[in-house]
View 1: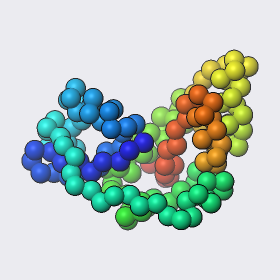
View 2: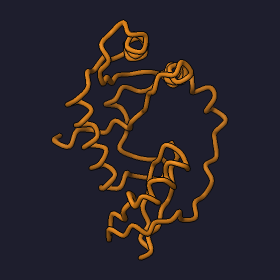
View 3: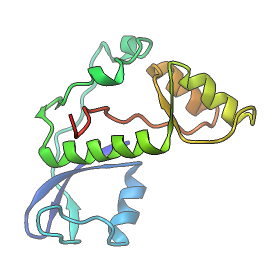
Length: 153
């Protein structure tokens, strides 16, 4: 995933997350990216500071991720904007409604489905970054979502 700071032709700034640069360009060209403030579809990338990795990042790869409930409602730059929090809460509700929770068995269940040993379906659960990377290396698509508290409480 790639994060862009975006700006519309009315100078409203907002964030966007995309699979990659090409996906962003394709969506903008198809006029599928709207300004959340005014609805303009004339969107461009705003100037951003570069992301700088930390020395501990490599060591952290083998550490398990915190359980979903422990993910804080705060991004590196501060609290999540209300609009982003609401979007993430809607995403969580859709995942919980349409997918099976498999807990810590996520990686193994994803492999079973990939090999045809288990019915293909939407699943969610827990995996450390190393397991997620191994799944991707095996050609199994996985995504990590920030797991924010439910909207209802």
